[in-house]
Image 1 (cartoon, helix red, strand yellow):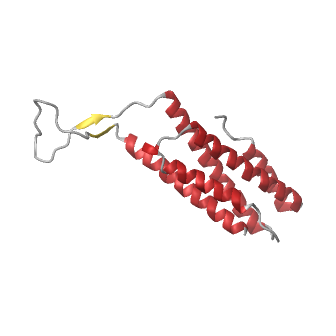
Image 2: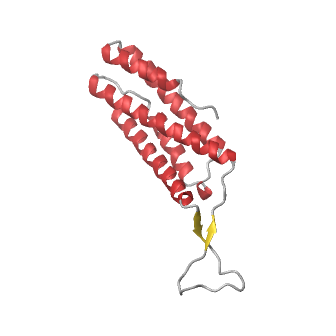
Image 3: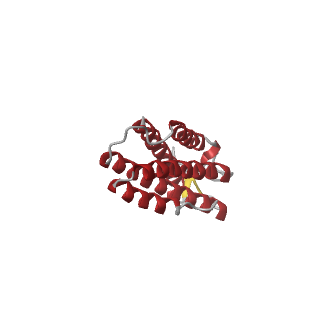
Length: 168
């Protein structure tokens, strides 16, 4: 059962990575193709030429959301790594996490990915952060109950992780 939850988390990570990569691709070059016809009095140099229009500058709020998403991606990546290491090092008899939490995480990521224009709202980022906090907290509770050498190291890593969540 723990592996199923981990699979949902990895799916969520892949969705967020694709979302971030898509946003980066759109804004990387500084220009994008014009969506309409050529301005009045202008002619294309060659048939098929496309006029380029300058990209729209990002607002401070948009940059802050991008930064927050990047931090949450890093947290999810570290969480998955910690969980994989713990699964390898420890033998556990019951599932690590509630499957519902990981499914919720994946659903939040899917909703963010299909948002109109790839925009991220503060609400989506807060939900993502809160879901990750819940997963870290549940895993921390489980690991503390294990009480072995592997769980001591994992507890330390999870505490560090739980202190790294951004304010939104």
